[in-house]
Length: 233
Image 1: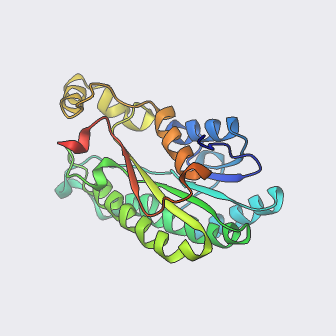
Image 2: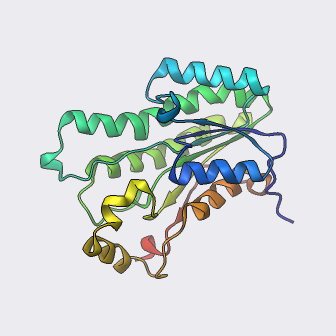
């Protein structure tokens, strides 16, 4: 029987107040975890190195340690590369990539002290694909997350810390409202969706739960697409 329970585990989820992050927070709680949501809307900017360090230390003090980290916070700027300013590029890189590094680096010593645990990063199908809309900064950062996942998985395997990623396709959340409020763009997305249906946030959360659970104890360094067949083309 697959063991998906997280009883006694302490999990940190970045960007945990909306969309996939909120779905993950709820699902982890239903499976027995104590969940700490780090979100800019509740006062934690995960691109701020000091804020990240303080937040992880506080979580460890209050809950006795940290076992799991989900690096979910992210952003996109859907402009053509020639229209994207340096400041806009940097903002995407800081949240989608640098924050993943800062949070993972901060979490590692706490997870190690617990005898090991799991980190799951939110990559994207755009980490493997040039995409169907101009979105260079997002695609570049998500490709980097895929390889950062591999690098940290190898570096921390001896400490029994598994590092994996999930690569969703388009999911209907506030993040994708500009796409799904446009019938023409929605039709283009569905043309690249062989199953004819898109995953709900809860289905992405289920993949994250699996990778954080004992059922995936021999899985590390992989990026699991939840993409309705997008990458099979």
